[in-house]
Image 1 (cartoon, rainbow, N blue to C red):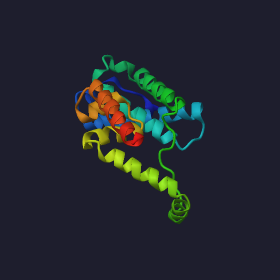
Image 2: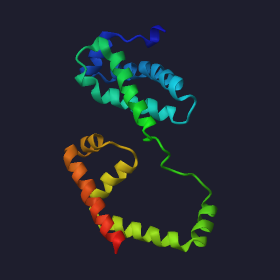
Image 3: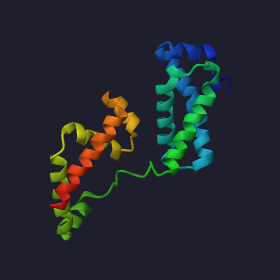
Image 4: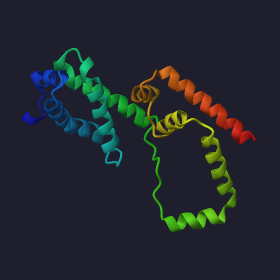
Length: 175
């Protein structure tokens, strides 16, 4: 249990840029977060994702934490936000694993779907690489704010890119 205690000096070191302190801090929070999610979600394959995303939130917000003694409360609030995203459906599976031979059988049996794939590829091909990247990140569940931070732009610019990209794609599908 002493290993899970959060030392204020350790938090301050992590805030000042000490990578080792930050790593120790996040490792200590990992067990607490895992138990938080286990109690609320039960045993689920998404627990690892929930914990990891919460740790990323904490990592990203550590510098703005004014009172190092409130790190645990800060971490639990981040976990609560992550849990809310989970309940809103953000963690729906994006990948479906299946047998490649079954994929060939399905694609040859349904030629209409093959045409839809070509249309999607054509619609995506009219977008700029920047717009395609933003749509890809949205599909993976990233928020506008996170995308803006990753691409070094504003949240408003990202939203506008998504809006314009969707309009362009709608026109392609309409024709």
